[in-house]
Image (cartoon, rainbow, N blue to C red; front, side, top):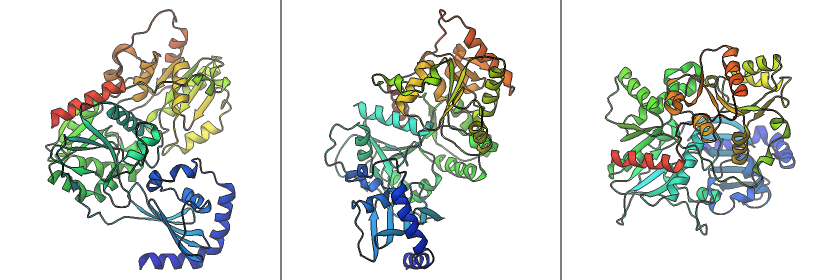
Length: 496
């Protein structure tokens, strides 16, 4: 009844303008992925409204009804007029119910928690590690946490020591499903025929470990997760950092509250897997400060740094202007704690003094960075000495690391510092802010700076530019992702 009321109300007000707009979309669509890629086994992963419109247009998704019709696919349900989606309901991977006029979002609603429970395994089998990829099978923003999830997933599928299954929570029902179709798309499954993302089952000794931070998902699935434990399973979470608790000034208030809610949910779990000792120590100190009653086991492991095997001629993918002179690389989402304002100011000092050097930034735009983004986009050095990759492929990122003169990590707070490890892995001088976690990861193998002045980073860059290239730099040991996963699995066994 509620759906029908919304449909007719929106239809009366918006049908004419939406039809015209939708026709424009069809002619000017900027959908990056080929909608045909979603046909078949992965159709249930469809959550993008623009892609649904495209699939309806090419006939891959059928509309039931000629004048007023309905089309359903994946997490979407569209009410259509003459085959054109007018109103679309989306159950998105963040476990919100979103309503759209055509492709444009109108409102977002909280959802009633799921009442589903996990299926119980009826056959005897070894205990299983279910690694939850969260929203990753639906979209990948290429930031640090999804990269960690992808690499752990890839390595888990390669080993035979434990039964390993990547999974995700279904945004419609909340039940956890095998991420087979997504893994097949990555090329990680040998048998790609008739891939179906089946619902998981639990038996005593199984683990379900979260890789993503999503309080909405955990709240929506509270009954399901409780049933997993009641059947003898264990719940865990990878803890990337607790920076939102320690430095709320770096986050939007809403995001800080969601993180705080997520953190307070996982303290009741069976195991927390921190990605550094610094993060483990920070969590323990936070538990003590908050006086929360928790018996959760916690330990830490370090992340890996190796990339996939590079393709031939991979370095040809970079613009020639970048490699025309020495360049320094910072890889991280654009967000307040990453030190970007100081970083750019430091290179402005170098450019003003006549130093021939480039700065390359790789990272999507995050939050509270509008001023800095405007500064970059309007900078006279943009695409001359200053380069920004809002999203880089694995091959582009690998090429940048390989050819960089040095790597800079200006973050004021981190849980690990993936680019520190990756820079060291590639044998590059790494300039890093002097904070405890970087000392843990890089020891004495980094070039440290302190303070917020422009000269602090500029001086470190000069040291790298003037160093004797014939002298090798001290390279602390960095882990492969295979070693990282092995350490994670050992910690899991310890908690079992």
